[in-house]
Image (cartoon, rainbow, N blue to C red; front, side, top):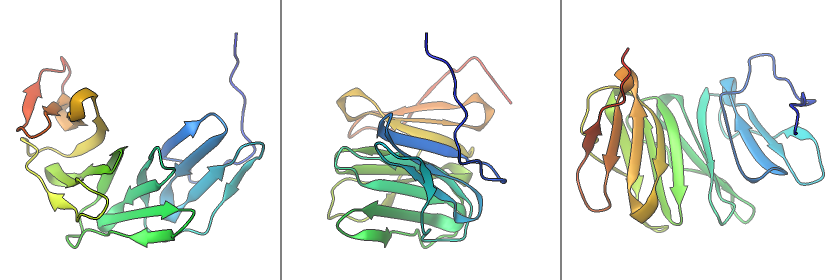
Length: 173
């Protein structure tokens, strides 16, 4: 079977999140604005970062647009055509997770922050997440459902066009 292999790039402060569309085209983010990319046929390389803030989440859309989130409301996108673009949230709350589904983008973070953009031309709006705990991860599920995980074992599902439902995770703390 397959075995783990150490990678040449080992940032001293570590890496916090990883995403990609294939095993050969990956993005990683970390402290102090760290942005790394592994391109097909190449090694990991550090990219010029759009921020010096700590980054906590990264997602890659099917169109290869990359989304990163981090401290102080940092919310940025990168595409080959436009480079880095800022979508920073005006409230300086730390963002921990980001997900992409077509034109839809969702970011979550401290104090139950949930930001959603429904269309490529639309703006991000704050959405009620149905909890008060910090949200650490977000994903789109089948049928456009939005799934969130957070502190105290919280798992939430927001159906497309619906409101949040809390599911028991069987864990706490």
